[in-house]
Length: 125
Image (cartoon, one colour):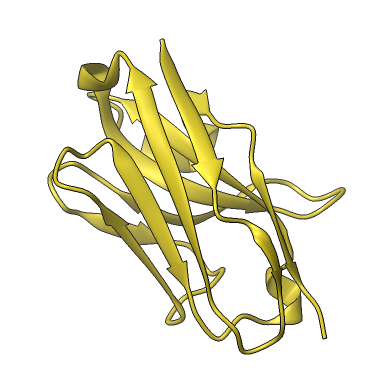
């Protein structure tokens, strides 16, 4: 099993920035891709960005051009730098991790194998 814990959410004004972090623990050697997903109440979870251990990045429509995703040297901490935040960016941000061998088409269709509990981001003036 892999445990994921997000941090860094909060309240920010439009145009501001936030940095989210996700720490992975447990059987991390079985994890390849890690990513951030975004969900508003009553809506489905959608991909913000995914980064593989090999450095390949995949982005969804949310935050494109404004958000950056990175991992530390161990590959076990995932970060999301969110700049120029907009009201529509408000929601819960989840960290997800996929097992080694999962393809982008798999986690694009079915999501990640492991999830954190999420961190709330509120953009409000």
